[in-house]
Figure 1 (cartoon, rainbow, N blue to C red):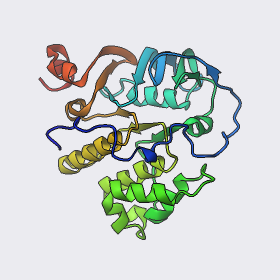
Figure 2 (spheres, one colour; figure 1 turned 90 degrees about the vertical axis):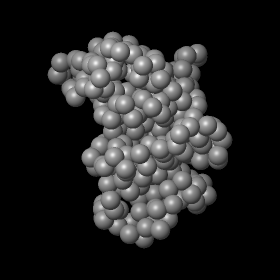
Figure 3 (cartoon, rainbow, N blue to C red; figure 1 turned 90 degrees about the horizontal axis):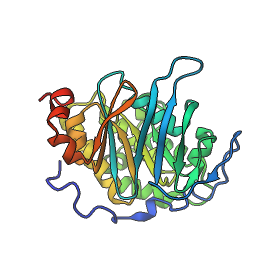
Length: 274
């Protein structure tokens, strides 16, 4: 990875990120509404408590956030609730307490579809591409909420991920794991999101591919899009993180800058292998 992942962050081509979010599409109509909630971080899931369906709580008063210009990383042991926290922020489970705010709006009641229209891009860990479709068709599917000309955005994504330009007519399911992840991220970027959420983007890839993916994530952050990311490769993720959260049993155990968490002796011994 780059020796200076923070250098020149914030302005390679901000047009890939739409400050309004969601292109020019109208919100997908769900059951809830967003309400004004000024102040605070750009995206925050605050004091979240909840679980799936009628099951027990998995999250317990959990708070995670990311601000403009940041990469925020959620780490912790298996079963700590990392992906559940991400899904809660995206609206994939009902909160029994707490709230989610995006750019000054309380969006707790909105469906995931409405959150995409508000400007949230989400890349799940698995089943995140259309395997039988070509790379280009996958990217086009990402523009489903756009009513404007999205060809310029596609060119920007090909500039970010040059291998996708070379393989644009190839079925996405035939690509390597790292290349499939680039397709998934690219498809999320086609919505021109205000914030990008990544759930375990380096799961199952080799260390070399992991480093390449992290470099590409840094490149995306340099376009001006804040990134909230769940990662099992904690040490490597914290190296590129402006902000880090360590979750244990669905609750905040430690938080701080990536540098501070890497230097914390308790964090190193408990979660980073010493």
